[in-house]
Image (tube, rainbow, N blue to C red; front, side, top):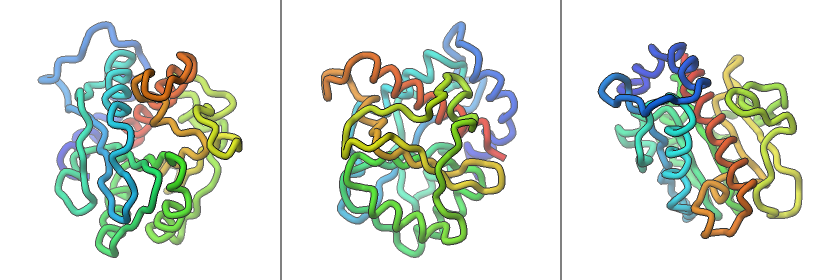
Length: 231
């Protein structure tokens, strides 16, 4: 990755050590690279902007619970814009259709292969189109269920049963699928759970405190893994 991604890659080992320790004081933004989440603005008609309070709340949790130097706000990015190359973690969500152009397919694959981490969070209605589009990005790497032993479930907080179930959807068990490039989990798909709704302000969906907390904890794990696994 270029820009911020190169800095993250060089500091990967240090970031991992910092991330798993509680933050005694807010990190000095002048002393380390500033990290944030990129919210993917995609085409196709889906509401990519769903859950406006989700990512600020997740970033606040990361800032409070780790020593990672994260920004207060996410960045809205497109796959053809230069800002893509400055974020280590790309988040996409929505209830509707997702569509990538041929150019976007090439750029997304290149960004992921160069160390980027894509987290797709089905907000109930994105499943069919996301599976179709990610298969176009990686026709040679199928989505597989991420094993419960994977560090993403244990890096900061322990989830021995895997991703927590936040919302009912079809009443099916929550599952975490992924695409592996070598031993690196490069794409994570949270299905039948809706972590983003769990990250939102509690008065939006009226989730009980324990589900809000579980969602934030899983998000901290995801982001920590993303920035510490950059090659």
